[in-house]
Length: 251
Image 1 (spheres, rainbow, N blue to C red):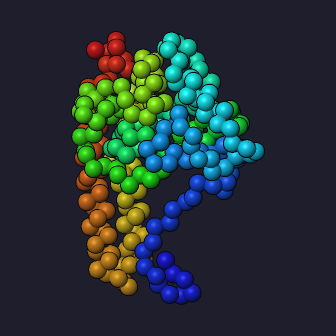
Image 2: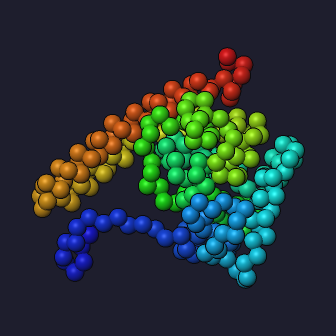
Image 3: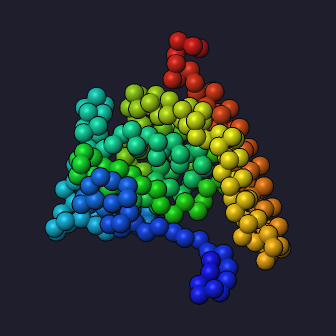
């Protein structure tokens, strides 16, 4: 980063969760935006960062009520009405594929929640993803920490995830989404493209002025390529073990 022609070194630019963020990512930015806080779940009075009028948490109460519905068919209908399930499945799958043990699914932590007034449904937004890829054998399905492994289970974690994934249809849809991401997004080819772009920027920025810094950063990106590539291999292997749950007729 340079300021007034002075080189101030390497900085991380982090986007804030505010009205500007909502305008860039949603067609209607006037809904309630909640901060998950530290280890707080949706059944608690979360801080509201954005939203009109006085906070009353009525929309959160509707989400909690849907999650606690005892009948599974009714629970699916109620969750469909209050939660953007398509986005939630992608959110959940990416947390597990990137081994994010400190996210919403596994730890009820590091998330934002936006009630989109355009569709009257909630959208989960990841936050604070600084604990990814520590355990390359992380399960691709959410489950309690003591049971982590290839057959991790569907029983605990964030309230909405825990209750949603008790529904067999959502289990199958989730696994199908994992398979889709492994084919289209979470792939070695995509990783190579992204890291080559990073390496090119590092070389351009520091190649001549800070060669030691450039060498260090290039070494880190190459380590990341190997590390994340191995996670992709393990996740694909885990998915193949679950594939019969998505396509029972192929067993």
